Length: 567
Image 1 (cartoon, rainbow, N blue to C red):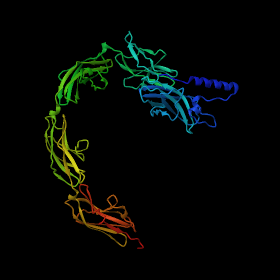
Image 2 (image 1 turned 120 degrees about the vertical axis):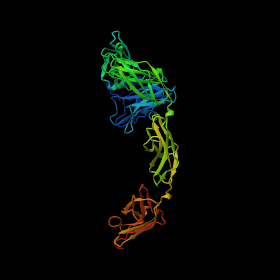
Image 3 (image 1 turned 30 degrees about the vertical axis):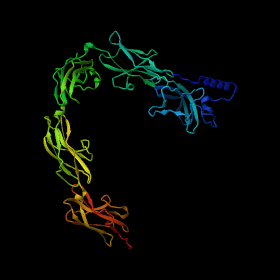
Image 4 (image 1 turned 180 degrees about the horizontal axis):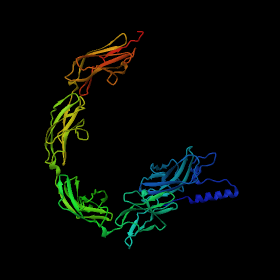
Protein backbone atom coordinates (compact mmCIF):
# COMPACT_ATOMS: atom_id res chain seq x y z
CA UNK A 1 0.00 0.00 0.00
CA UNK A 2 1.26 3.50 -0.85
CA UNK A 3 -0.06 6.83 0.42
CA UNK A 4 -0.03 9.98 -1.81
CA UNK A 5 -0.36 13.07 0.37
CA UNK A 6 -0.27 15.68 -2.45
CA UNK A 7 3.03 16.97 -1.11
CA UNK A 8 3.69 19.43 -3.95
CA UNK A 9 0.27 21.04 -3.45
CA UNK A 10 0.92 21.47 0.27
CA UNK A 11 4.32 23.14 -0.24
CA UNK A 12 2.70 25.46 -2.78
CA UNK A 13 -0.02 26.41 -0.28
CA UNK A 14 2.57 27.13 2.42
CA UNK A 15 4.57 29.28 0.00
CA UNK A 16 1.51 31.35 -0.96
CA UNK A 17 0.57 31.81 2.69
CA UNK A 18 4.09 33.07 3.42
CA UNK A 19 3.78 35.49 0.47
CA UNK A 20 0.63 36.97 1.98
CA UNK A 21 2.45 37.78 5.21
CA UNK A 22 5.35 39.46 3.35
CA UNK A 23 3.62 41.25 0.50
CA UNK A 24 -0.06 41.37 1.43
CA UNK A 25 -1.02 39.31 -1.62
CA UNK A 26 -4.39 37.55 -1.78
CA UNK A 27 -4.16 33.83 -0.93
CA UNK A 28 -5.06 31.05 -3.33
CA UNK A 29 -6.99 28.03 -2.00
CA UNK A 30 -5.52 24.56 -1.96
CA UNK A 31 -6.39 22.45 -5.03
CA UNK A 32 -8.93 20.26 -3.22
CA UNK A 33 -11.07 23.27 -2.12
CA UNK A 34 -11.02 25.21 -5.41
CA UNK A 35 -13.44 25.13 -8.32
CA UNK A 36 -11.96 21.91 -9.70
CA UNK A 37 -12.93 20.14 -6.52
CA UNK A 38 -16.60 20.88 -7.00
CA UNK A 39 -16.87 23.13 -3.91
CA UNK A 40 -19.42 25.92 -3.75
CA UNK A 41 -18.04 29.39 -3.06
CA UNK A 42 -19.69 31.82 -0.65
CA UNK A 43 -19.55 35.49 0.31
CA UNK A 44 -17.08 34.68 3.07
CA UNK A 45 -14.57 32.97 0.76
CA UNK A 46 -14.10 29.40 -0.33
CA UNK A 47 -14.78 26.56 2.09
CA UNK A 48 -11.78 24.64 3.39
CA UNK A 49 -11.31 21.66 5.66
CA UNK A 50 -8.49 19.57 7.07
CA UNK A 51 -9.41 15.88 6.83
CA UNK A 52 -6.85 13.11 7.18
CA UNK A 53 -7.54 9.71 5.60
CA UNK A 54 -6.14 6.22 6.10
CA UNK A 55 -7.15 3.23 3.94
CA UNK A 56 -6.32 -0.47 4.15
CA UNK A 57 -7.33 -3.22 1.72
CA UNK A 58 -9.10 -5.78 3.93
CA UNK A 59 -9.78 -8.29 1.18
CA UNK A 60 -9.45 -8.62 -2.56
CA UNK A 61 -12.61 -6.58 -3.10
CA UNK A 62 -12.93 -4.44 0.06
CA UNK A 63 -11.03 -1.39 1.35
CA UNK A 64 -11.55 -0.02 4.87
CA UNK A 65 -11.32 3.76 5.24
CA UNK A 66 -10.85 5.87 8.39
CA UNK A 67 -11.33 9.68 8.42
CA UNK A 68 -9.95 12.06 11.06
CA UNK A 69 -11.13 15.69 10.96
CA UNK A 70 -8.41 18.23 11.85
CA UNK A 71 -8.65 21.62 13.51
CA UNK A 72 -9.49 23.56 10.34
CA UNK A 73 -13.12 22.52 9.80
CA UNK A 74 -16.25 24.52 8.83
CA UNK A 75 -18.01 26.44 11.57
CA UNK A 76 -21.44 25.47 10.27
CA UNK A 77 -22.94 21.99 10.48
CA UNK A 78 -21.32 19.46 8.15
CA UNK A 79 -21.05 15.78 7.33
CA UNK A 80 -18.06 13.72 6.21
CA UNK A 81 -17.82 11.20 3.41
CA UNK A 82 -15.52 9.51 0.93
CA UNK A 83 -15.66 9.29 -2.84
CA UNK A 84 -13.50 7.08 -5.02
CA UNK A 85 -12.52 6.08 -8.55
CA UNK A 86 -10.98 2.85 -9.77
CA UNK A 87 -8.00 2.52 -12.12
CA UNK A 88 -7.39 6.26 -12.65
CA UNK A 89 -4.26 8.43 -12.59
CA UNK A 90 -4.71 10.90 -9.69
CA UNK A 91 -2.49 13.44 -11.49
CA UNK A 92 -5.11 13.65 -14.24
CA UNK A 93 -8.38 13.10 -12.40
CA UNK A 94 -9.33 13.02 -8.69
CA UNK A 95 -12.58 11.59 -7.32
CA UNK A 96 -15.39 14.07 -6.71
CA UNK A 97 -18.76 14.05 -4.99
CA UNK A 98 -21.05 12.04 -7.26
CA UNK A 99 -18.46 9.45 -8.21
CA UNK A 100 -18.27 6.18 -6.26
CA UNK A 101 -19.37 6.69 -2.66
CA UNK A 102 -18.02 4.80 0.36
CA UNK A 103 -20.51 2.92 2.57
CA UNK A 104 -20.57 4.31 6.10
CA UNK A 105 -20.22 1.86 8.99
CA UNK A 106 -23.14 2.59 11.39
CA UNK A 107 -21.33 0.98 14.33
CA UNK A 108 -18.04 2.89 14.06
CA UNK A 109 -17.61 6.64 13.74
CA UNK A 110 -15.95 7.97 10.59
CA UNK A 111 -15.41 4.45 9.21
CA UNK A 112 -16.30 3.58 5.63
CA UNK A 113 -16.05 0.63 3.26
CA UNK A 114 -15.16 0.87 -0.43
CA UNK A 115 -15.93 -2.12 -2.64
CA UNK A 116 -13.77 -2.88 -5.68
CA UNK A 117 -14.99 -4.73 -8.74
CA UNK A 118 -12.01 -7.11 -8.83
CA UNK A 119 -8.82 -7.94 -7.00
CA UNK A 120 -6.52 -6.11 -9.44
CA UNK A 121 -8.32 -2.78 -9.06
CA UNK A 122 -6.26 0.25 -8.00
CA UNK A 123 -8.48 2.62 -6.01
CA UNK A 124 -8.09 6.37 -5.47
CA UNK A 125 -10.04 7.42 -2.37
CA UNK A 126 -10.71 11.02 -1.38
CA UNK A 127 -12.28 12.60 1.71
CA UNK A 128 -14.85 15.39 1.51
CA UNK A 129 -16.93 17.57 3.81
CA UNK A 130 -20.43 18.76 2.89
CA UNK A 131 -22.19 21.48 4.88
CA UNK A 132 -25.90 21.77 5.56
CA UNK A 133 -26.13 24.53 2.94
CA UNK A 134 -24.55 22.36 0.25
CA UNK A 135 -21.07 23.86 0.30
CA UNK A 136 -18.26 21.35 -0.18
CA UNK A 137 -14.53 20.96 0.27
CA UNK A 138 -12.18 18.06 -0.32
CA UNK A 139 -9.47 16.70 1.93
CA UNK A 140 -6.64 14.25 1.50
CA UNK A 141 -6.62 11.39 -0.99
CA UNK A 142 -4.81 8.07 -0.98
CA UNK A 143 -4.05 5.39 -3.55
CA UNK A 144 -4.70 1.77 -2.57
CA UNK A 145 -2.94 -0.79 -4.74
CA UNK A 146 -3.96 -4.41 -5.42
CA UNK A 147 -1.89 -5.91 -2.59
CA UNK A 148 -4.04 -7.31 0.25
CA UNK A 149 -2.79 -6.19 3.67
CA UNK A 150 -5.09 -8.32 5.83
CA UNK A 151 -4.90 -5.92 8.79
CA UNK A 152 -6.38 -2.68 10.06
CA UNK A 153 -3.87 0.12 9.96
CA UNK A 154 -1.41 -0.24 12.83
CA UNK A 155 -2.22 -3.04 15.32
CA UNK A 156 -0.08 -4.86 17.87
CA UNK A 157 0.83 -8.42 16.99
CA UNK A 158 -0.24 -11.39 19.11
CA UNK A 159 2.09 -11.49 22.15
CA UNK A 160 4.86 -14.07 22.27
CA UNK A 161 5.89 -15.39 25.68
CA UNK A 162 8.45 -17.63 27.31
CA UNK A 163 9.36 -18.62 30.86
CA UNK A 164 12.78 -17.38 31.97
CA UNK A 165 15.44 -19.66 33.44
CA UNK A 166 14.36 -18.81 37.01
CA UNK A 167 11.06 -20.62 36.31
CA UNK A 168 8.89 -17.78 37.64
CA UNK A 169 9.42 -14.83 35.27
CA UNK A 170 7.47 -14.54 32.00
CA UNK A 171 9.04 -12.61 29.13
CA UNK A 172 6.51 -10.95 26.82
CA UNK A 173 7.18 -9.44 23.41
CA UNK A 174 5.12 -8.02 20.55
CA UNK A 175 5.47 -5.77 17.51
CA UNK A 176 3.44 -3.32 15.45
CA UNK A 177 1.81 -4.78 12.35
CA UNK A 178 0.86 -2.38 9.55
CA UNK A 179 1.58 1.32 9.19
CA UNK A 180 0.80 3.89 11.85
CA UNK A 181 -0.29 7.29 10.59
CA UNK A 182 0.51 9.51 13.54
CA UNK A 183 2.54 9.20 16.68
CA UNK A 184 2.11 6.23 19.02
CA UNK A 185 1.17 7.71 22.38
CA UNK A 186 1.57 4.57 24.45
CA UNK A 187 1.88 0.82 24.14
CA UNK A 188 1.98 -2.13 26.48
CA UNK A 189 0.36 -5.35 27.67
CA UNK A 190 -2.79 -6.10 29.69
CA UNK A 191 -3.67 -9.29 31.58
CA UNK A 192 -6.99 -10.75 32.69
CA UNK A 193 -8.81 -13.98 33.34
CA UNK A 194 -9.53 -15.98 30.13
CA UNK A 195 -12.89 -15.03 28.71
CA UNK A 196 -12.58 -11.38 29.79
CA UNK A 197 -12.64 -8.57 27.20
CA UNK A 198 -9.33 -6.67 26.96
CA UNK A 199 -11.11 -3.39 27.71
CA UNK A 200 -12.01 -4.82 31.14
CA UNK A 201 -8.47 -5.91 32.01
CA UNK A 202 -7.31 -4.15 35.20
CA UNK A 203 -3.67 -5.27 35.11
CA UNK A 204 -1.75 -3.15 32.56
CA UNK A 205 1.97 -2.82 31.87
CA UNK A 206 3.22 0.14 29.82
CA UNK A 207 6.37 -0.34 27.73
CA UNK A 208 8.65 1.80 25.61
CA UNK A 209 9.50 1.56 21.93
CA UNK A 210 10.97 -1.88 22.58
CA UNK A 211 7.72 -3.81 22.66
CA UNK A 212 8.63 -6.18 25.51
CA UNK A 213 8.18 -6.72 29.25
CA UNK A 214 9.20 -9.10 32.07
CA UNK A 215 6.61 -10.13 34.67
CA UNK A 216 7.50 -12.01 37.87
CA UNK A 217 4.17 -11.70 39.70
CA UNK A 218 2.18 -14.46 37.96
CA UNK A 219 1.10 -17.45 40.03
CA UNK A 220 2.24 -20.90 38.98
CA UNK A 221 -0.36 -23.09 37.32
CA UNK A 222 -2.82 -20.22 36.78
CA UNK A 223 -3.77 -19.36 33.21
CA UNK A 224 -3.86 -15.72 32.12
CA UNK A 225 -5.09 -14.06 28.92
CA UNK A 226 -2.58 -11.47 27.62
CA UNK A 227 -3.13 -8.79 24.95
CA UNK A 228 -0.75 -6.25 23.46
CA UNK A 229 -2.17 -2.77 22.91
CA UNK A 230 -1.17 0.55 21.41
CA UNK A 231 -2.75 3.99 21.21
CA UNK A 232 -1.99 6.46 18.43
CA UNK A 233 -3.69 9.59 17.11
CA UNK A 234 -6.62 7.49 15.95
CA UNK A 235 -7.65 5.24 18.82
CA UNK A 236 -6.68 2.55 21.35
CA UNK A 237 -6.36 -0.86 19.66
CA UNK A 238 -5.78 -4.39 20.95
CA UNK A 239 -4.22 -7.35 19.18
CA UNK A 240 -5.17 -11.00 19.44
CA UNK A 241 -4.81 -12.60 22.86
CA UNK A 242 -2.53 -15.40 23.92
CA UNK A 243 -2.79 -17.56 27.04
CA UNK A 244 0.11 -17.64 29.46
CA UNK A 245 0.63 -20.16 32.26
CA UNK A 246 3.75 -20.96 34.24
CA UNK A 247 3.72 -24.75 34.57
CA UNK A 248 4.12 -26.29 37.96
CA UNK A 249 4.60 -30.01 37.20
CA UNK A 250 5.52 -30.86 40.76
CA UNK A 251 2.17 -29.47 41.94
CA UNK A 252 -0.19 -30.79 39.24
CA UNK A 253 -3.05 -32.86 40.69
CA UNK A 254 -3.44 -36.54 39.90
CA UNK A 255 -6.64 -38.46 39.10
CA UNK A 256 -7.67 -41.99 38.08
CA UNK A 257 -10.41 -42.90 35.58
CA UNK A 258 -12.55 -45.79 36.79
CA UNK A 259 -13.57 -48.46 34.29
CA UNK A 260 -17.00 -49.97 33.83
CA UNK A 261 -19.16 -46.98 32.89
CA UNK A 262 -22.87 -47.87 33.11
CA UNK A 263 -25.35 -47.25 30.29
CA UNK A 264 -29.08 -46.67 30.63
CA UNK A 265 -30.37 -46.03 27.08
CA UNK A 266 -29.10 -42.48 26.42
CA UNK A 267 -27.64 -41.83 29.85
CA UNK A 268 -24.09 -42.92 30.63
CA UNK A 269 -22.51 -42.71 34.10
CA UNK A 270 -18.74 -42.76 34.66
CA UNK A 271 -16.62 -42.19 37.77
CA UNK A 272 -13.11 -41.33 38.86
CA UNK A 273 -10.97 -40.77 41.96
CA UNK A 274 -8.69 -37.85 42.84
CA UNK A 275 -5.37 -39.34 43.99
CA UNK A 276 -3.24 -36.28 44.81
CA UNK A 277 -3.97 -32.51 45.16
CA UNK A 278 -0.69 -31.32 46.77
CA UNK A 279 -2.67 -29.44 49.40
CA UNK A 280 -4.65 -27.33 46.92
CA UNK A 281 -7.62 -25.44 48.32
CA UNK A 282 -9.76 -25.28 45.16
CA UNK A 283 -10.40 -28.81 43.91
CA UNK A 284 -12.96 -29.62 41.21
CA UNK A 285 -13.27 -32.81 39.18
CA UNK A 286 -15.27 -34.08 36.23
CA UNK A 287 -15.55 -36.44 33.29
CA UNK A 288 -14.53 -35.38 29.79
CA UNK A 289 -16.47 -37.10 26.96
CA UNK A 290 -15.23 -37.30 23.39
CA UNK A 291 -15.89 -39.17 20.15
CA UNK A 292 -12.28 -39.14 18.91
CA UNK A 293 -9.16 -39.39 21.06
CA UNK A 294 -7.47 -36.42 19.38
CA UNK A 295 -10.29 -34.16 20.66
CA UNK A 296 -9.28 -34.55 24.32
CA UNK A 297 -8.03 -31.38 25.98
CA UNK A 298 -9.92 -28.93 23.73
CA UNK A 299 -12.23 -26.30 25.23
CA UNK A 300 -12.00 -27.71 28.73
CA UNK A 301 -13.55 -24.66 30.40
CA UNK A 302 -17.13 -25.60 29.43
CA UNK A 303 -17.14 -29.04 31.07
CA UNK A 304 -19.23 -29.33 34.23
CA UNK A 305 -17.36 -30.15 37.44
CA UNK A 306 -18.23 -31.44 40.91
CA UNK A 307 -16.52 -31.41 44.29
CA UNK A 308 -14.96 -34.83 45.05
CA UNK A 309 -15.82 -36.64 48.26
CA UNK A 310 -13.43 -36.69 51.21
CA UNK A 311 -11.96 -39.94 49.83
CA UNK A 312 -11.55 -38.34 46.39
CA UNK A 313 -14.28 -40.28 44.58
CA UNK A 314 -16.80 -38.70 42.22
CA UNK A 315 -19.17 -39.74 39.43
CA UNK A 316 -21.03 -37.89 36.69
CA UNK A 317 -23.80 -38.80 34.24
CA UNK A 318 -24.23 -37.55 30.69
CA UNK A 319 -27.06 -37.92 28.17
CA UNK A 320 -25.48 -38.80 24.82
CA UNK A 321 -26.97 -37.77 21.50
CA UNK A 322 -26.05 -40.86 19.50
CA UNK A 323 -25.36 -44.56 20.03
CA UNK A 324 -21.96 -46.13 19.40
CA UNK A 325 -18.51 -45.90 20.98
CA UNK A 326 -17.79 -43.05 23.38
CA UNK A 327 -14.44 -42.16 24.98
CA UNK A 328 -14.10 -40.62 28.42
CA UNK A 329 -11.49 -39.73 31.02
CA UNK A 330 -11.52 -38.21 34.48
CA UNK A 331 -9.93 -34.83 35.10
CA UNK A 332 -9.22 -32.67 38.13
CA UNK A 333 -8.42 -28.96 38.33
CA UNK A 334 -6.86 -26.95 41.17
CA UNK A 335 -5.24 -23.55 41.47
CA UNK A 336 -2.00 -25.28 40.40
CA UNK A 337 -3.32 -26.67 37.10
CA UNK A 338 -5.06 -29.65 35.53
CA UNK A 339 -4.60 -33.38 35.93
CA UNK A 340 -5.99 -36.12 33.66
CA UNK A 341 -6.70 -39.81 34.03
CA UNK A 342 -6.43 -42.58 31.46
CA UNK A 343 -8.81 -42.63 28.47
CA UNK A 344 -11.44 -45.38 28.57
CA UNK A 345 -14.33 -46.30 26.29
CA UNK A 346 -17.95 -47.40 26.60
CA UNK A 347 -20.35 -48.77 23.98
CA UNK A 348 -23.85 -47.24 23.84
CA UNK A 349 -26.24 -49.66 22.09
CA UNK A 350 -28.85 -48.37 19.61
CA UNK A 351 -31.65 -46.88 21.68
CA UNK A 352 -34.37 -47.18 19.01
CA UNK A 353 -35.17 -50.60 20.47
CA UNK A 354 -36.31 -48.87 23.66
CA UNK A 355 -38.75 -46.49 21.96
CA UNK A 356 -42.46 -46.93 22.78
CA UNK A 357 -45.10 -48.06 20.26
CA UNK A 358 -48.19 -45.88 19.78
CA UNK A 359 -51.43 -46.11 17.80
CA UNK A 360 -54.07 -43.42 17.07
CA UNK A 361 -57.76 -44.38 16.79
CA UNK A 362 -59.34 -43.20 13.55
CA UNK A 363 -62.82 -43.11 15.02
CA UNK A 364 -63.86 -40.09 17.08
CA UNK A 365 -65.43 -41.11 20.38
CA UNK A 366 -67.80 -38.10 20.50
CA UNK A 367 -67.93 -34.47 19.51
CA UNK A 368 -69.87 -31.23 19.84
CA UNK A 369 -69.77 -28.10 17.72
CA UNK A 370 -66.36 -27.10 19.17
CA UNK A 371 -64.95 -30.09 21.04
CA UNK A 372 -64.17 -33.74 20.37
CA UNK A 373 -63.12 -36.76 22.40
CA UNK A 374 -60.50 -38.81 20.55
CA UNK A 375 -58.52 -41.88 21.54
CA UNK A 376 -55.19 -43.61 21.12
CA UNK A 377 -53.24 -46.45 22.68
CA UNK A 378 -49.71 -47.03 23.96
CA UNK A 379 -48.98 -50.59 22.84
CA UNK A 380 -45.49 -50.87 24.37
CA UNK A 381 -43.28 -48.80 26.70
CA UNK A 382 -40.03 -50.15 25.21
CA UNK A 383 -39.22 -51.90 28.46
CA UNK A 384 -38.16 -48.71 30.27
CA UNK A 385 -41.48 -47.09 31.23
CA UNK A 386 -43.46 -44.13 29.91
CA UNK A 387 -42.62 -40.60 31.09
CA UNK A 388 -45.36 -38.80 29.13
CA UNK A 389 -48.23 -39.63 26.78
CA UNK A 390 -51.21 -37.85 25.24
CA UNK A 391 -52.86 -36.46 22.09
CA UNK A 392 -51.47 -33.57 20.05
CA UNK A 393 -53.72 -31.74 17.60
CA UNK A 394 -53.95 -28.72 15.33
CA UNK A 395 -54.89 -27.39 11.88
CA UNK A 396 -51.63 -28.61 10.29
CA UNK A 397 -51.35 -32.06 8.71
CA UNK A 398 -48.63 -33.36 11.09
CA UNK A 399 -49.35 -31.95 14.57
CA UNK A 400 -46.65 -32.30 17.22
CA UNK A 401 -45.81 -30.98 20.67
CA UNK A 402 -44.81 -27.60 19.27
CA UNK A 403 -48.54 -26.95 18.79
CA UNK A 404 -51.42 -27.98 21.05
CA UNK A 405 -51.50 -31.13 23.10
CA UNK A 406 -53.50 -32.83 25.85
CA UNK A 407 -51.38 -34.87 28.24
CA UNK A 408 -53.01 -38.04 29.56
CA UNK A 409 -51.81 -39.70 32.74
CA UNK A 410 -50.86 -43.35 32.61
CA UNK A 411 -48.44 -45.72 30.89
CA UNK A 412 -49.31 -48.64 28.60
CA UNK A 413 -52.91 -48.96 27.43
CA UNK A 414 -55.80 -47.04 25.88
CA UNK A 415 -56.25 -43.32 26.49
CA UNK A 416 -58.84 -40.70 25.55
CA UNK A 417 -58.49 -36.94 25.44
CA UNK A 418 -60.92 -34.05 25.00
CA UNK A 419 -59.64 -31.47 22.53
CA UNK A 420 -61.19 -28.00 22.30
CA UNK A 421 -61.21 -25.07 19.92
CA UNK A 422 -62.00 -27.11 16.80
CA UNK A 423 -63.13 -24.87 13.89
CA UNK A 424 -66.35 -25.69 12.07
CA UNK A 425 -66.39 -26.85 8.45
CA UNK A 426 -62.60 -27.36 8.36
CA UNK A 427 -60.38 -30.45 8.49
CA UNK A 428 -58.65 -30.85 11.86
CA UNK A 429 -55.76 -33.23 12.66
CA UNK A 430 -54.74 -35.23 15.72
CA UNK A 431 -52.44 -38.10 16.70
CA UNK A 432 -51.34 -39.91 19.83
CA UNK A 433 -47.81 -39.69 21.22
CA UNK A 434 -45.73 -41.31 23.97
CA UNK A 435 -42.30 -40.54 25.40
CA UNK A 436 -39.77 -42.42 27.49
CA UNK A 437 -36.06 -42.17 28.25
CA UNK A 438 -35.21 -43.28 24.69
CA UNK A 439 -37.23 -40.58 22.95
CA UNK A 440 -40.66 -39.58 21.68
CA UNK A 441 -42.85 -41.49 19.19
CA UNK A 442 -46.06 -40.39 17.39
CA UNK A 443 -48.92 -42.53 16.17
CA UNK A 444 -50.76 -42.22 12.86
CA UNK A 445 -52.29 -38.86 11.92
CA UNK A 446 -56.10 -38.92 11.93
CA UNK A 447 -58.61 -36.25 10.86
CA UNK A 448 -62.00 -35.04 11.97
CA UNK A 449 -64.49 -32.66 10.33
CA UNK A 450 -67.39 -31.00 12.18
CA UNK A 451 -70.19 -29.67 9.97
CA UNK A 452 -71.90 -26.53 11.17
CA UNK A 453 -75.20 -27.75 9.69
CA UNK A 454 -75.29 -30.56 12.29
CA UNK A 455 -75.36 -28.05 15.17
CA UNK A 456 -76.85 -24.83 13.79
CA UNK A 457 -79.69 -23.61 16.01
CA UNK A 458 -82.91 -22.72 14.14
CA UNK A 459 -84.79 -19.56 15.15
CA UNK A 460 -88.40 -18.70 14.19
CA UNK A 461 -90.76 -15.72 14.49
CA UNK A 462 -88.19 -13.07 15.39
CA UNK A 463 -89.96 -9.73 15.88
CA UNK A 464 -89.31 -6.27 17.31
CA UNK A 465 -92.31 -4.35 18.71
CA UNK A 466 -91.83 -0.63 19.31
CA UNK A 467 -94.00 0.93 22.03
CA UNK A 468 -95.24 4.51 22.08
CA UNK A 469 -92.72 5.42 24.77
CA UNK A 470 -89.84 4.38 22.50
CA UNK A 471 -89.09 1.11 24.24
CA UNK A 472 -88.66 -2.03 22.09
CA UNK A 473 -89.59 -5.63 22.90
CA UNK A 474 -87.77 -8.43 21.07
CA UNK A 475 -89.31 -11.92 20.83
CA UNK A 476 -88.11 -15.14 19.20
CA UNK A 477 -88.78 -18.87 19.25
CA UNK A 478 -86.13 -21.61 19.06
CA UNK A 479 -87.47 -24.17 16.60
CA UNK A 480 -84.58 -26.66 16.84
CA UNK A 481 -81.72 -26.59 19.36
CA UNK A 482 -79.98 -29.69 17.87
CA UNK A 483 -79.87 -31.23 21.33
CA UNK A 484 -77.55 -28.53 22.70
CA UNK A 485 -77.73 -26.80 26.05
CA UNK A 486 -77.22 -23.06 26.37
CA UNK A 487 -75.50 -20.88 28.91
CA UNK A 488 -76.80 -17.57 27.47
CA UNK A 489 -79.63 -16.34 25.24
CA UNK A 490 -80.48 -12.85 24.07
CA UNK A 491 -80.63 -10.29 21.26
CA UNK A 492 -78.04 -8.07 19.59
CA UNK A 493 -78.70 -5.01 17.46
CA UNK A 494 -76.95 -2.13 15.70
CA UNK A 495 -77.70 0.67 13.26
CA UNK A 496 -79.19 -0.67 10.06
CA UNK A 497 -76.52 1.02 7.97
CA UNK A 498 -73.76 -0.81 9.86
CA UNK A 499 -74.66 -4.26 8.51
CA UNK A 500 -75.20 -7.51 10.42
CA UNK A 501 -75.07 -7.09 14.24
CA UNK A 502 -73.15 -9.44 16.56
CA UNK A 503 -72.70 -9.81 20.31
CA UNK A 504 -69.78 -7.38 20.01
CA UNK A 505 -72.32 -4.62 19.27
CA UNK A 506 -75.33 -3.78 21.45
CA UNK A 507 -76.76 -6.83 23.18
CA UNK A 508 -79.04 -7.81 26.04
CA UNK A 509 -79.23 -11.17 27.84
CA UNK A 510 -82.65 -12.78 28.34
CA UNK A 511 -81.53 -13.97 31.82
CA UNK A 512 -83.08 -17.40 31.16
CA UNK A 513 -82.03 -20.45 29.20
CA UNK A 514 -85.22 -22.44 29.75
CA UNK A 515 -88.12 -22.78 27.34
CA UNK A 516 -88.32 -22.60 23.60
CA UNK A 517 -89.27 -18.89 23.46
CA UNK A 518 -87.78 -15.83 25.14
CA UNK A 519 -88.08 -12.05 24.95
CA UNK A 520 -86.22 -8.92 26.03
CA UNK A 521 -87.35 -5.32 26.48
CA UNK A 522 -84.93 -2.46 25.79
CA UNK A 523 -85.41 1.20 26.74
CA UNK A 524 -85.03 4.24 24.51
CA UNK A 525 -83.35 5.97 27.41
CA UNK A 526 -80.29 3.69 27.54
CA UNK A 527 -80.36 1.09 24.75
CA UNK A 528 -81.68 2.71 21.55
CA UNK A 529 -81.92 6.25 20.16
CA UNK A 530 -85.10 7.83 18.94
CA UNK A 531 -85.35 8.52 15.25
CA UNK A 532 -82.83 5.80 14.33
CA UNK A 533 -83.33 2.63 12.29
CA UNK A 534 -81.85 -0.62 13.65
CA UNK A 535 -81.38 -4.23 12.66
CA UNK A 536 -81.79 -6.98 15.30
CA UNK A 537 -80.75 -10.65 15.57
CA UNK A 538 -81.36 -13.31 18.21
CA UNK A 539 -78.42 -15.32 19.55
CA UNK A 540 -77.59 -18.22 21.86
CA UNK A 541 -74.27 -19.35 23.37
CA UNK A 542 -73.87 -23.10 23.87
CA UNK A 543 -72.21 -24.69 26.89
CA UNK A 544 -69.03 -25.32 24.89
CA UNK A 545 -68.79 -21.64 23.89
CA UNK A 546 -70.19 -21.63 20.33
CA UNK A 547 -72.41 -18.65 19.43
CA UNK A 548 -75.30 -19.15 17.01
CA UNK A 549 -77.36 -16.33 15.46
CA UNK A 550 -80.66 -16.06 13.73
CA UNK A 551 -80.43 -15.55 9.98
CA UNK A 552 -77.64 -13.36 8.64
CA UNK A 553 -79.35 -13.07 5.28
CA UNK A 554 -80.48 -9.62 4.17
CA UNK A 555 -83.83 -10.59 2.65
CA UNK A 556 -85.27 -11.94 5.91
CA UNK A 557 -83.57 -9.44 8.26
CA UNK A 558 -85.67 -7.79 10.96
CA UNK A 559 -85.50 -3.98 11.20
CA UNK A 560 -87.19 -1.47 13.49
CA UNK A 561 -87.28 2.30 13.84
CA UNK A 562 -87.66 4.17 17.14
CA UNK A 563 -89.95 7.17 16.50
CA UNK A 564 -89.07 10.68 17.56
CA UNK A 565 -91.10 12.44 20.22
CA UNK A 566 -92.91 14.62 17.63
CA UNK A 567 -93.81 11.68 15.30
